[in-house]
Image 1 (tube, rainbow, N blue to C red):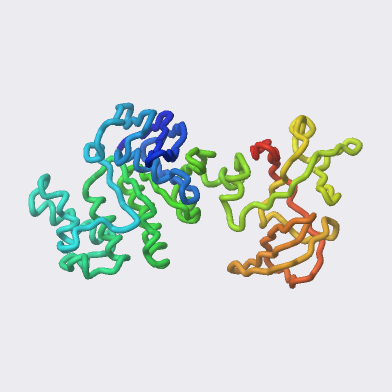
Image 2: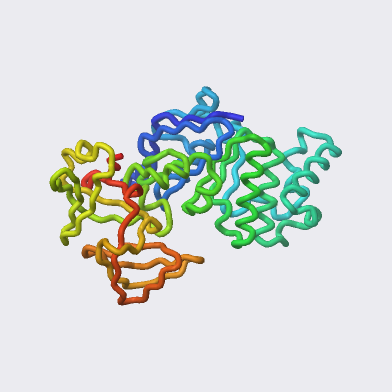
Length: 361
């Protein structure tokens, strides 16, 4: 059990004359027993951050602490970190039993090893394969063996780099649930890297959303969805992504509106202290999630240009104010070419500064 702190960490890679800053001045504290998700697009720096935690990469600057102890220069082998990778790291010439048992050979008696291996194999669901050579297993079973192999080590922290990417959907769902169960059962921190938001938002207690080597928001899954701090987080979290409509504030009488280039007006007088909030912001972006749009008797004119099915819901692509937005609705029948009036749930609107992309709330 360990608390991890990355303190102002930067990692720069050099290749000839080219330099790439993979992580920029990143500070992140991971409390003990936390299931942390590192989420972001490919190339955003999340795997480099994970490798720095594990000791597989040394930061160019900044420090790494485990429970207040500076481990920046400490090798990965001395940090008691268990890693599970996208492709299972196993000994191909050994049986499932021996792959799991190998880390216990120097610490336990044969009887104790057998007890540990049988227990973890039953928990993971691979008891029937203990005598099988791992080279004869499919990738789904091999990844289960890899998880069992690190479980018996009793590590201080688990670090997982996209461990479910290569397994089939049914097994992915099974292992997703099992990983959370493992974390709660053992009371250890898990650091989970993925570009798949469904996995991360389902599993993690806290999530760090990264882009261009920086953490844009470190928060609960609920806050990332409902209170994104900028347009990138708002766009990246959720499916379909949040809709954005460019506008500018206008006062009419005692009410405040957002006006679009095509002349549509959105009343935002319900927002507390809205006039003070909008002061100094000439250009804004109105953000609204697809599920917070509805067909109304009075509203903004919208033309349906495409329809997608998403489970029991339908995703309607609607032309509004010269741009296309998406609305996720149930029990509404629209076909391409139909024109309707739409409105937003006003308490779900999020406003962003158009220049900085930062939320005003």
